[in-house]
Amino acid sequence: MTWTVDETEPVTSPAVKLGGVLREDPGLSDEWWATLVRSFTALASQCTSRMAVRQEQVTAAVTRLWPDIDAAVTEWTPAHADMAWANVTAPDCWILDWEDWGMAPRGYDAACLWVHSLAVPGLAERVHAEFQRDLDTRSGRVSMLYVAARILAISDPVYVDNLHAPAKRWCEPIAASLRA
Image (cartoon, rainbow, N blue to C red; front, side):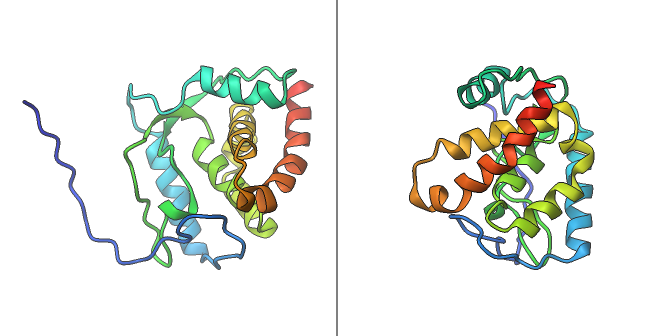
């Protein structure tokens, strides 16, 4: 029998948003953003054969809404793969809930935060600005469409009322850029 032990440390900062949809800017500091960017960069530099997202999942979700898009991912990097405002803390930036981590399309974690920020346009713009280097790549744009397609498939009124319209509006130019 093999046992795996994870080393842990108590985290006293609360999650930015426990569940549901973030509807107001949490007022995260520049230092907080710098820590998150460094964390994503460090994670992306790791090596693993563990898969968090598979090409088949991306293709199915993206082509369900945008059937004329080639959803092939050309760059894969390690990712947290469950990035939402419930899995990051503030005022100290800690990333929680690591059981899903593994390889994902480049920009996937940033795309998750971006989509979960669309109800707060300034926050969505900040996420995009901080992770533009990844999100503006082909794989980053595919990631954005993939995460948006997954959100658009949720019928919960909280998601429908707060995220569906901005996701559709923001994703059309992204889809157009992938058609070109």
